[in-house]
Every structure is written in C-alpha cells, then in structure tokens.
Length: 215
Image (cartoon, rainbow, N blue to C red; front, top):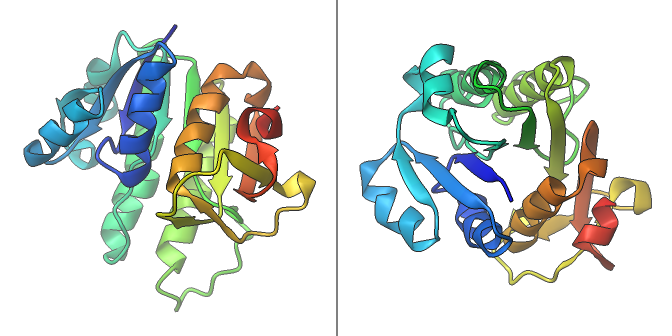
C-alpha cells in the first residue's frame, strides 16, 4: 500500500478520509496549521505534521512530504478573506504540486468542487468569486503538470451520514449535494483506481456504489 500525505488534515473531509485510508492499508500523514489539532488528527489514525503551508516555499513543502507516494489536497482558507483564499486555495496548492514533483511523488488527488473551472461564471462582485477563481486556476495548473492527477468535484457538502452511493455528472448528477463521508470515501476509491488518473470527476449522492461510479 501507499504512504499518503493529506494537506488540510483537520478538515471535515480529511478527518473522515484518514481512518478509511488507514483501514485500506495506507500509512497517512496529515498536515495541519494549528498545533491544537494534533490530537484530533492522531485520533483519526494519521500522523500529524504541523506546518503552515501558506508561508512555505516549494523546497520546504517538498522536504515536508518527501517519502510519501500520494498527495491529497483537501486544504482551504475557508472563505472570507479573498486575499488569503488566493494565497491558500491557489498559490499554496500550486506550490504543493511543484513540491510533489520535486519530492518524486507522481500521484496527486485534488478535492475541488462541482462546476469548478475557468468558465465558472461567478461575478467578480460575488463573495464566492475568489474561491471559484482560485480553485479553477489551481485545477488548471494541476492539469498542466506531469503528475498523475485526479480532481474530485463534489457538490454541496453535507454532514449527513454517508450512503456509499454517488452518481457522477456523466451519469446524470446535476450538482445537488453529497455527504462529507462519501467524499472521503471517494478520495480513498480514487487512490485505489488508476482509471481515475487524468479525470475531473464531478458527483452528487446518488445510486451507484462509489468505487463503481468512479470506475
């Protein structure tokens, strides 16, 4: 199995993904900014790595993730301050991609959102614009790299209990909602399936088992 490092290790998706990854036989490192979050990450089965990636250059991020096989980006500024949104969701994400290449890591799974893209159509006056633009530019950069990338595009996230069932946009999903449990499971399934490499997979909760839907 693989050594997987997760950026945004204390996020609601990441904390759900860590025990699933461990259960699948992976060794998991989780990067967190706040030392107070170390206990939660450890309880989820991951090895906490305390670092503020907003302020780390490519070389320092590469040193941080050296020895891992897979990068999962599930970090974000959390909205609000547009300047910080660009700094984390776009700039730090891009540096993590360059760092992965420098550290000899080929596999990269990005958690984005349903409808992400440079043609997102969100007006510049909309509070969501900075996030939409930052994610679009980061995703676009990832596609231009030589990394073995997968971009997951879940629709609106809920805290409902996971169902284990999704539908992709190709299967008719329209951008409704999906549980964070099921997004976490989709991360694990994407890592397990080389057929997801080079694909942007948008999905809702639906009627198809996750591994089958991603296949």
